[in-house]
Image (cartoon, rainbow over all chains, first blue to last red; front, side, top):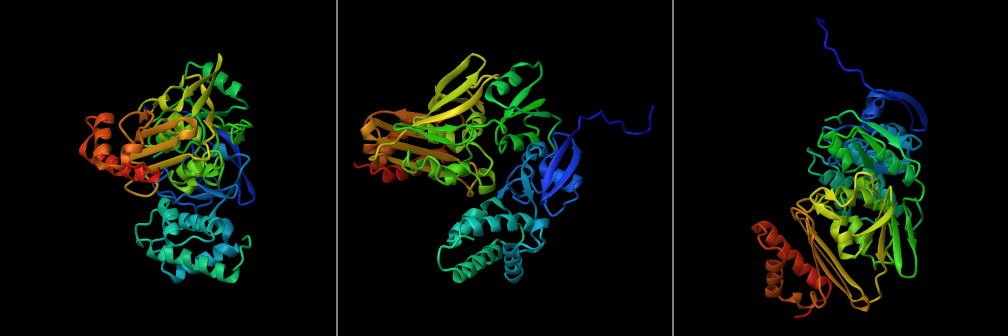
Length: 174
Length: 272
């Protein structure tokens, strides 16, 4: 008898993902969701995994420019799409404003939810430039934070919205 | 939580999807947006052998409008509807419902057809489209057939769709200029599944007066009766209607439904 654990053979398939403008050729089981593929196969660990059933928002990434959960679908389904993770936003002007605002307003403590919060915050600022506090809170409902009570996060996003409205009083596109 | 092993294949057309669902002695399952199925897979509540992926099928998302009808592809996302698809044809009804579904990151991928076939009693389109009197077009090996949205859900998580059928279209008759509608639900938290749903469409020009009570243990209760909505301004009339429509409802849900019904009556301008 073998002293080693024996695992059944698994079916894997090659997948090419476009992440942050770079092509990643990986070999995965079809059941591997995008968040696992990003973290375990592409070496991109900014995307966090919380609940793995679409509720907590920690795994939120951008797919073709719009936020999506990365825990809910097989990574195979993202072939041919453009995925953006937090790693790509170092030099993004809006992400820089949000990072500064999150720091200033104490919008994080442990930081686990922060990657998803920043992805959602970017979407709010770009899609809803006129959002008030109530709307920001409504839009944040899909991202759970267990440290801050949300007050700092809401203030941070509101402050970026206000700064942008002050800088561009007309309805100029972002 | 990781899904049990499965395989996945993209279908290039509806015909191919139907074929992929047929030629099997395993357990295939259609995946549209995967925003409910993905959670079920991860929780291992669903363990299909194979997913038939509709994502690559051209023309399955988006809207076509005629003078009297709005036709939505089954793969149309909630976000596309939230952003205005079908707004004019339904006097803003569909975008209002779409905005309340889960969260934007889910709405960006979740689809109307997937939600209907998933048949969660607490989900929004099941009740909303029953209120709108939508017709659902399914494609199977023998061609297409049409089912009324109000009778599509058979029980919780069971829809009137055969193992080798795919939902292709949602057809909604255009609301008239005088149409009034209401969609109210109670959720413990924004974006959560609803504990109670009440929806109504009143369109005298088309002879439509329909009330839907959803978020139940099974399919929504649909009341399609002329003159039904007008008397609901009175609390006693609402209590009588609820007692008749949903006998035996538990105390919490009965209280929630009574409150929602009052809001619906106000929305559609009911008078005593």
